[in-house]
Length: 144
Image (cartoon, rainbow, N blue to C red):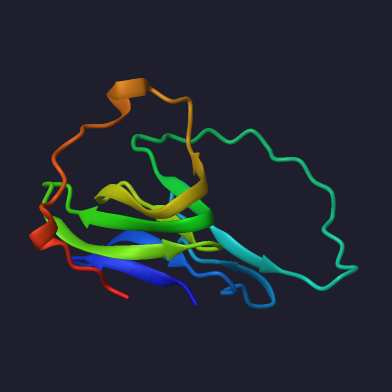
């Protein structure tokens, strides 16, 4: 079961915990999301028909990203677009996080970390993001 993180009714992120995939294919994002995320679980012998993807023009204004935690523990701090701190969550080995364009975020490595980051490209360098100060430690609130 995925965890949706919302603020004022707007989807900020989706967390998939290790082992959340049920049988078959289940998209956890809505069709209009610019980065799609699904869980897939199939038995041995299941065949997926070969296919190619067609050229479909898409307009993407903001970067969404997916983090796949392979080893360690990562704290994710969630912020509004106005840079107001909301809360934090911990991600563990096997967890996946989709971050939408509707929130700011920061990270702290709690335990030695290996992760994958997947996002739309091409990367625009520093034009791709606006940095701001991390919330002070006394303000941090980790939700389990």
